[in-house]
Length: 240
Ligand code: ADP
Ligand code: MG
Figure 1 (cartoon, rainbow, N blue to C red):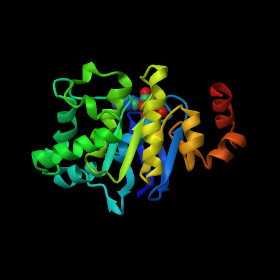
Figure 2 (tube, protein in one colour):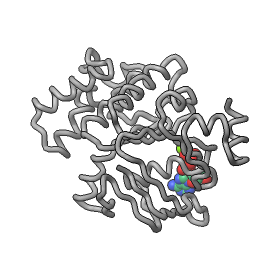
Figure 3 (cartoon, protein in one colour):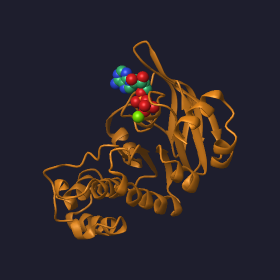
């Protein structure tokens, strides 16, 4: 579902993605771990072209990512993204936050978009908040709206970049539970997180990044019990 081949990216002199080659099969849940600054966010942003790459190729479901234009807008909607900051539209209701993309980009009629949005909001447990504005919701609720909004675009892949890092601790699980359910339903997911419980429970595979490289690519069991590299051992020593 995701295929990256020899992807390189610099920010000026900084080599932030180094020769990244990886494949994520349909339905696989991949957790990306690694120290701050190792390139995890840049990897996610490259996958849906929020960030251009210097060289290499990225394909989603067999289709190479176009550089720009209409085709890019279409492919971007194949890749849903959820950020640390929820990025909801503050002056729109929860319902409008979820229907906007489907109406504008997918060309869905208002009523159909509304029905689908309510179904998605129900799925993430907040249909009763549909008429409210983002600021009236807790952080955990806002992040669940952000997930519903991404799902409303009918993505083939969901990228999560530290989706629970900005949340108060008591709200982390309500978001992880929604993500776990999505994983159980077979969504292809790439998840940058420091939540090791989620990684152990939901991931099929762990990628460990350091200095712009994928240093380890293993099952959660193998990675957590027998990391190979010193970088990974050091990282796990600090967080576990
Ligand atoms: P991570 O998400 O693993 O913390 P990032 O992908 O955000 O890492 O960043 C990787 C490196 O690239 C860091 O050193 C960061 O400072 C740098 N970086 C990220 N975005 C930019 C940017 N827009 N311009 C310059 N440097 C950047
Ligand atoms: Mg990051």
